[in-house]
Structure formats: structure tokens, C-alpha cells
Length: 335
Ligand code: KG4
Ligand code: ZN
Image 1 (cartoon, rainbow, N blue to C red):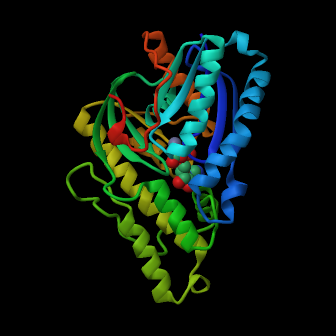
Image 2 (tube, rainbow, N blue to C red):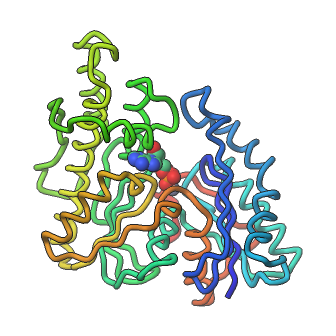
Image 3 (cartoon, rainbow, N blue to C red):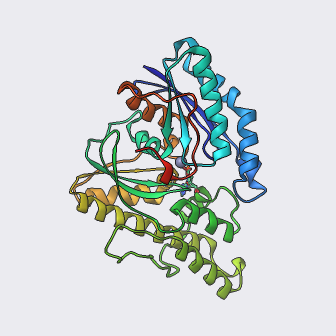
């Protein structure tokens, strides 16, 4: 089954063709970084307009790279939430039009389910049951996953998502946008023990996380030091990154123990972080756990993961109606 996936929930316009939920034939991501950089973050209205300019070209590119035409596509899967509603509407409207015109099965996909499905792309697939740490710019959630549509929430951040903290701290350090990768790169030359930063809620005894206090600690440290030119930026980047990674991995390990499983999946944009990937591998080896990390291209937002998640629901017979709407928050996500 050839599924065309479409993703436009934030600032990446993406289309992909995935065969049988696993083999990526093409995955095109049109980044909007250049549009948003001057504002230091994603501007929703700018994102929606950029999606409109790019969506048809990105879809045509994906088909061309896959060596296919629309006639080869068996179904269309598209993110319909959670995310920026105006952005989602662009991909959703395009997907509906295509599905209607070509009389194709059509399905709305939960973006977080997409991030988890990324672990099944072009790799050894994880075995159910597993714990998934979904860690992105909008979400930091722990799930026990017992099947493709069976996700049980175990814990989450009570304030900022980990990726959001990366982006905000990068801004404080003057590293620009997008921030996560900038901190990752700078931290390679830094000492993670140079600055003593908090690990919020590390000992809370549950699977709740918090990253807003850590960001404030960095801001206070900078103010007390007298500005960014009075600190070692690589050391501060490395120390901040270590605090996030320590917290994420401690909570992920606790979740694995609580759920009584032996497989951990880490996905979402922050799973591209080199330190998190390295430390997660060490932790899992030490504790006899299996670890699945998506390939780097499938960590950050992409449509291949949406096509994959869509595949499993489509083959189970699920379809969306053409009046499907977009939604902003997880609270509105269909079960
Ligand atoms: O999954 P994603 O592309 O979009 C959302 O669903 O939010 O995640 C984007 C987030 C951003 O906050 C970005 O800074 C972060 O992932 N990110 C990283 C890295 N690459 C992307 N954070 C840390 N290290 C990275 N290498
Ligand atoms: Zn995402």
C-alpha cells in the first residue's frame, strides 16, 4: 500500500510516500526556518502562508522522487492535530482536495502518534509493548504503547516542552533560531559540569517533568554573570543540555520500570540531540533494555511518520470524513 503522507502542523511543509508503513520512497521537507529566523521563533500567520506557497510543490517533489504519479497512490494520510490550527488547515485542505478528486481513502493522523510511528521507518521495528518518550518542541510525554493504536499516557511536562526549553535557552544565549541544533553543536566543545543547573522534579517520585524552571535558572545565571559575554557559551550550552538529558532519561527509565517493559523508544525533534542519543544508548545497554531511535531525518517533523501512522490505521479499515477539522491541543485528540 502506497500512502502519501502530508504534514504541516508547525513550520515544516512535508510530503512523503511510504510503502506498507515502513519503506520510505520519498520524504520531502520544505523548511521555513528562513521565514521565521528574523522573528526568533515560529510566527503562526507567516507559517500558514508559507505552507500555502509550498504545499503543492512539496507534494509534487515527493511523488517525483518516489518515481510515482498520483495514480500510484492508494491513500492519503495527513496531520490534523495537535499543532497550529491555521498551519494544519493548509495540509488538511490539500489532502482533502486530492482525496476527493482522485477518490482515495483519506485519514487524519495524530501528530504524536506520527512521531512514534517514525520508530518503524526503515529500521528494525520496536516490539510491543514499549515505552515511548515523545520529546519535541510542543510536547514532552511518556506513553506505554501496547499496539499501534494503544497508547496509555504515563507522564508529561507540566510546563514547557523540552524542545521549547532548548529554543528559549538558545535565544537567551544569542544562538538564534532554530535553537535545539545550535545548542547541540555548541555543547560539543563545552564542559557539561561547568555550571550547576537544576534537574527540576527529578525526585518527584512520579513521571511528571518540568523545564520552565531550568530555563529561568539559565536566565538568572546570565543576569548574575552580567551577560552572555561574561560566560563560556559552550560550557553553558553543555551544562543546560546535560540537565535536560539527565531529566529525560531518569524519567524514561522510571517509566520503563513502572510499565514493566524492556523496550524504550525516544522520538520527536529533541531525539535528534546527539547527547541524548549517546546517553540513551549507554543507559539502555547498562540496564539491559532495547532502544529504538528514529533515523535523524525522521526525528524532527516529517510526513513519512504521518504516512506510517496512517498506514496502520488505514489497513485496519479506518477512514476520515471530508468534514474532518484540525485541532490545536492534545486534549481534543481522538482516542
Ligand atoms: O518534532 P519537532 O520537529 O516539532 C514539534 O513537533 O514540535 O521538534 C522540534 C523541536 C524544536 O524545539 C527543536 O529545537 C528541537 O526539536 N530539536 C533539537 C534538536 N533538533 C531539533 N533539540 C535538541 N537537539 C537537537 N539536535
Ligand atoms: Zn513534531
